[in-house]
Length: 322
Image (cartoon, rainbow, N blue to C red):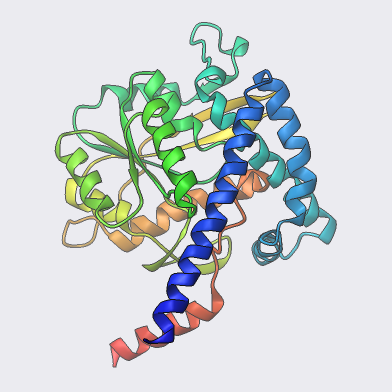
């Protein structure tokens, strides 16, 4: 019997066992948080995330990403952003189990609740729109608030999301999203068809657009070239529908601002069809502006720039042109 299948099976068993143990700690942590009020749990989690997060191995990657994006910033500034990023992630993790409670937007007295909405006229336009529409956002602030806010205000959005690599946690997250966030579509094979079905029926979809995509389109993001997923642009080309930028901004004292911008101007080619490359670049540029405005609220733990892969990508493109 070949050794390779045995090694592969052993690795899978080890990985699944490790993931199961990690998931149990995660579930225990969520149960522990439920013993406290939302503010106490969220503030305490932020406090420990700021220090413990800096020990996480992927923090090194986040530090490298920040130096690539902001070469003008000092080491002290980079470290401050990293700690603030972990504080934001700690709050986001704890807020996850209180999403329904912390979304207490009061349209008559917005200053009394945790959530305020900027661009209310655009929100109304989206809600009253007859026909398909696409919303996009990035991993900034607490991005989980957006679908909850939309559902609470009567806008049904089917959101595309990337489930955690840990399959045990992923099942839990998917169940929580389905019950508290409306319709969701895990980012995997067949996801684009699922979103297309929603748009076919005149529905609205939401897409996170700030991750690296191996088969993507070349774009500039924070001054560096990378590859972006063209799914949003391809769906827009097929349905010729409006595209709304939306984001969550974390405010002091546990508050949020949901910002919904006017539909962007869609670029078209000379043939009158949506320019997929130009639209993908335009969407990426909008997220670029968001990250520059609040760098501490973005998820710097993604491998957004991959120089070695980009070198191979350029070589492959040159071969295609020969």
